[in-house]
Image (cartoon, one colour):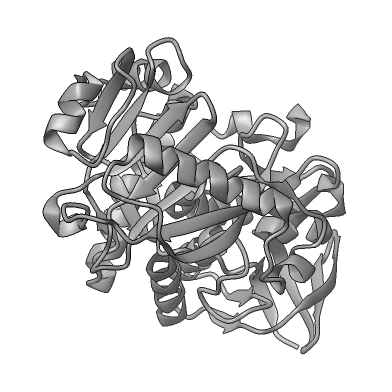
Length: 379
């Protein structure tokens, strides 16, 4: 039976990054995931994820994002792969809403370069985007998207190169932590380590009963539209976009090599109990159909030229905390168990830095970044 320094449960966005950072530091690391590498059953899939720095949620995220940007750049250089596409991001909404004031606050606090515009000026530049006449718009040119599955796979590839052992299609049945270390029981046997790092995404409540009742899993849908006219490709200079509307928050991406304009609803979502059972179901229920109708209505009103033909769709999961901020902490009374959970639908852009922070915590090193707001005790 191998004795590991750290066992990582979950090899998605955070787990893959943590495994890489741990292995790179020289730790003996075992990564375990119940599905194949870069799978489509959790939260880290669907072709793309927006990345931005002028964070409307709260300025305290900006230092994390600055480090995340550095780490994404390093990952590209070390892998010779293009993962971060700086298309720019256009955000539109009421001047007294949530998004625009939040973007302006973060940009001012950290002197981030943004360009305020009127919605009519946005439409002049990109006829496929419009907003209400009494709204404000902001362009963040240093924003864009990450190729989500490729980011996960790249972290896994480098983790393996640095000496990490990865066990995929391997389910964890239980784990136990004590003063002498941790034991993890899988369908391939038992493994022991000094430390356990759980990055279980929508399975976090099952893997960590202490988080039961503190996390809520929401099923979310992603849609790809076949545009009726040209101009929506990344190669056309079309940006990522985010709207705050009276029906909630919506976002999307340029078409990549003819794949279609990806659009999704950040608001809402269908609460689910068991991700495993839900992941196997392809049928939409009434709530899912309502979601697609809201997205179609949004496209019709704010994305002229995209049309209404959905050519592909996918689902993923938000694992949300009550305050929609992350959990990055040791388990109370179990300092040899580190948890990263509750990314609440806005976490993938951070996974490079969350993996680094998690690897530091798992090795008894304090992060230089402020993670105080993400402690379990706040609940």
